[in-house]
Length: 629
Image 1: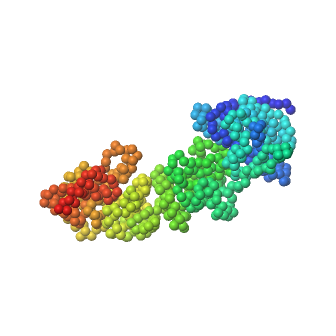
Image 2: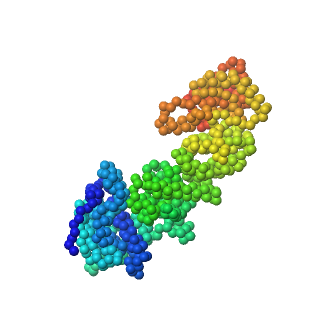
Image 3: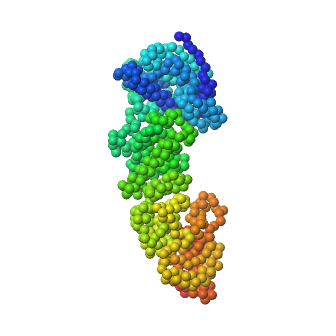
């Protein structure tokens, strides 16, 4: 049969032109695509042989073989899969039989080619080889047929098909590499081996590398033994019963590059309308780059055991970015891009499954391994807290996972919300909490005095994200959360207590007015407090106003032009200082530096900065000097 010359389909010509002249930097994936195609061909031959045993003679080892000829700049990938006949070659290598291709090609032409994932978006991985090859030959014979064919093209507008002898079924692809410097590495054995190990180590069939024959010291040609490149099996596709704990831990080190052992893991296989495997790990230590927005932090994505990408963020929400592991889908197209992933229903369903499994694993650890979970929480709980904003679907599960320090925990102990509610006194109606800048300062906040005296536990929060988290964390098991630094706190009081409080408000009205007059630029109100025991005063925030801590955070983010929220100063009517000041106010005497001293003390007690440290020091010095006289 004479050589047939044919023209590529228009879309293929456009695609080849883009590939050959593109600025696409990740050229190595052409090898992944060719190996993946070979694995598919092996799969198809094995599948068809189930109904026609003649297609796969007994004893046939399905495999992929790789040869590199460095000096000749030639690379060969061969498989003994199903193979192709003339019609298959025209259909598979001459056209793109896929809907939507024309529109995609238009979008591709209109975009910035240097930033577009050229490969993996429409099932045409074979053509990626033209990024590195000046000419490609495909020698193939279909299983069950006698005639072989040679397909060849230089990636221009044409390809040729010729009848050619081939002994065994399968396909042999020969790439004649370009002379370009950035392609030269693919004529090196080490590069080819490392790329295959990177992308295809978990392909089901053996991938064998054949080193070049070389002359020995005697001038004789020696043919080195073949080397299998994918020795490891896909651990995630094995049954959990077949895998030891040590194997799980060793695999974690591989996928995470973390030297410490994971806290927990989840291994699952989903079947039904979708089939996929997932192996998810919870690190025991926070990854060093956990706060780096540009860091790789997603799961590894495989399709049919073929590596697709290292950092598939579409599989996880940002608040689970600490999770490491692998997802392997049977239903995604092998050539899948990040753009496609963002709107892919399969990915959406897998993502839901992954989130569910991670939350289940955390809950299981929290219930059965309390100490381990508490240690994990101290490392990564702050990231999990991010799930309380821009997420309304998993709030109930996240509430169960929260852990807190409180006024009743000691040392490294933590309390869950369930434990908190279980030990609430009968007369406590709400879940109390207090937010501060650090755990040491918050413990000494005067606002806690009455709560301690009444036996009411207060959750102590000091992470920067807590202000945002509590905006979404409004109630748990029908108990509302109450920030004790906001508004007023309604305690159950006896008639005598109510009467005493009203008398104090009346008796201290003059002092409150005097303090308000002096501190009016800083305070919204001065009032009698029912939450203080030992301290003379404290600062609280109006119920609907921005907290002082949030203001400081906003300033740190560059929002320095915001109007300051005026605070409320509460004074303790039973404290000697306040009684002394009441007497001065009632007698019409000047309060001197006392208003500045009280306000400064209240700011320092809650961990806030003084607006004018020098003025505060001057006031304290004058008061101490008066005592010294």
